[in-house]
Length: 214
Image 1: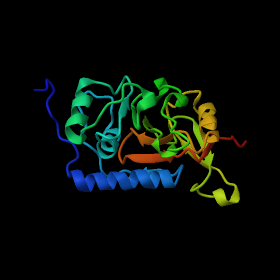
Image 2: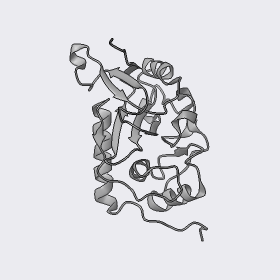
Image 3: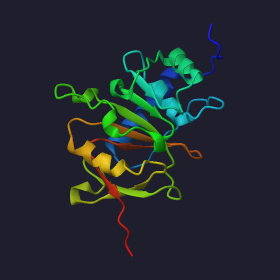
Image 4: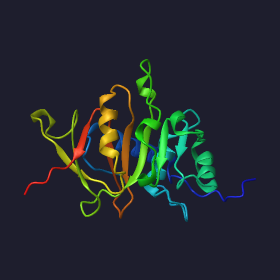
């Protein structure tokens, strides 16, 4: 018997998982545009994993998709919860993961540490689920362009804000984009006040620090 109590997962597992999956798909197909996440998982008391991250993990992960947890997320409570509700299988290191759950992005590994996919199977690379505050009042501003980005057909860049991304993020993302079709994809999960939001960064997008107009 587990030493950790089994707490509720998604209230309506099938319907809620479909809602969360559609939100994640919408965020990745419209990069840089914050998408509402209307369904959250009940919080785990004392856990660094916010309800939005937890909802994504419960939706996307199963025994066929190895999951890597960062140090803040990797607790016996979180492991028990994900094993019980979605039969999650945990990757021993980031290079073997299909998904990564990152509660403290400022301490995350460099992007090339994660599974990059292969020439034969680029779709088997990792998707990083990262907690971030997407409010304009928090964190630095970035800009992105690429397929699906609003205004991209005219060479435009779309701005977004995200807190706590590492100082090396833009440098590493440039290398990640250049490696296409290999490379990781990212879903940023707003850990701030409701309503929760997702923001997708597929490897096809170019990202830079926002230019400042005086």
